[in-house]
Length: 271
Image (tube, rainbow, N blue to C red; front, side, top):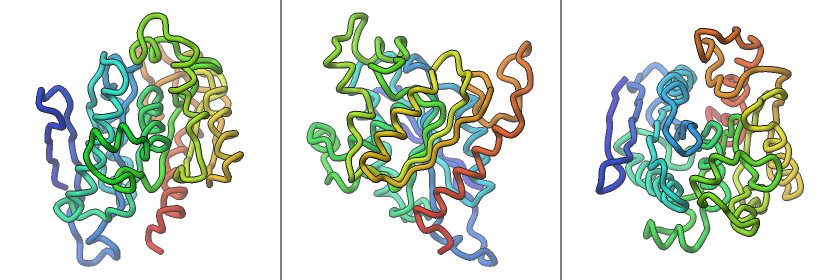
């Protein structure tokens, strides 16, 4: 495995860590791997470490290259989206260098990072974003998305902290609606895999439900897994998130192989 780190803005406040599997002549399709671009959560205040490298290792084991993005935090919209879009564009443009397939790149995000991944999945053809990055809209379109206990809606069970960072202390209903991803889904949105836990006390599972409903209404291939229990921020689900936390429900860990199978299907991996 090769690990590379590169900055994505002039101030060097945002960067990407690339985890690139070694090429193996004995493994089919190894020369051009699929990949995931990972956006950790943290309420747009910080980037959670447990939702970065540990997740990358899981997808490496499944044959994917992984890119963990430490994006700009504590900055208003559209700064995080511009970071995400620029990162995705640069990864796609450097596909040959990274030995990845430019047509098999998914975005993956947790909590607020799920909102950011969802923004890219639903706003890739936004005129202002395309103009800022200086590319074509299609070059910003992810081939699929995985949203993990995501922040979705500023109107339905909103995560107030995330939207206050993005929009200020007293966001208007109009601005909240504009950044509510269930309102941004169109028939051009890529396939989306969503999972959450029913008793998440930080980001309500209602967020995942409204996103799933929007995908269904627009006939977007999607898969929703709502597990019975587990605290917010459980990431790979193989360790408690705090010393005092109980072990998470073991079957929640199934989100990883389930998501890999979903990505394999809709990005035509090994097919």
